[in-house]
Image (tube, rainbow, N blue to C red; front, side, top):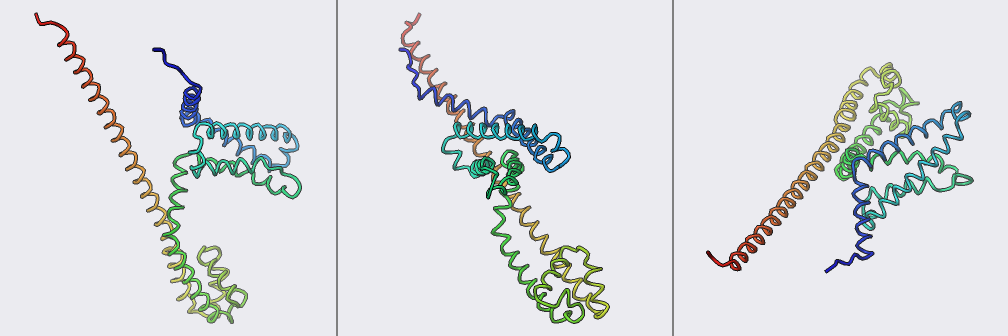
Length: 281
């Protein structure tokens, strides 16, 4: 009997081919190259002398790249259908490309600067970048406790230095807000000796007894806690993905073994049937 091929079968076959094409390494490399090219064109648009000479071709290239990215997005939607919209990275790409299509004139002229968000699509295309971002998002609950600890530290220290050093350096510690900003500068260690420590120590020589412990705690302890939480989240995420890949590989191997066993049983049944039909001797 001749098998009837329906339009639905053809459509599913085309979707499967489109899906394989979209997830192929060559296609992903091609997309990464175009994103990097778009990043270069957006950077060149900030170069005034270059735009005066090549502004027209550069804008035409940018428009062509936007059309290509839109076609690539449409192909992914066609290939994966509903699964595309359940993928957060797919929605991210859709929002980024959608912003690029908004008219950059009038009240929406600020959106022209948002075209550079297209470069952020590298995060969704490069797997290693996706792992880092997903790990950072997964680490947010653990980082909340560290943020609360830092806020408590800053609050206590800001009240303390306002009372201790307001007279010695009023432009830095005259108010609670000034003290918070000065403590933040101390934490970043940007000009902290010349701008804060030495001027205060001219009036209060013992002030180093506060500044040194604060810098050690705020800069080297609390900030390293952030790094530790993120690194632990990346390690956990990688282990989870490796476990999932191992389970999928075992399931695939089990399915292959079951298929081979089924074929062997079918072959044995055929051999037994042949033996029954062929007379002995």
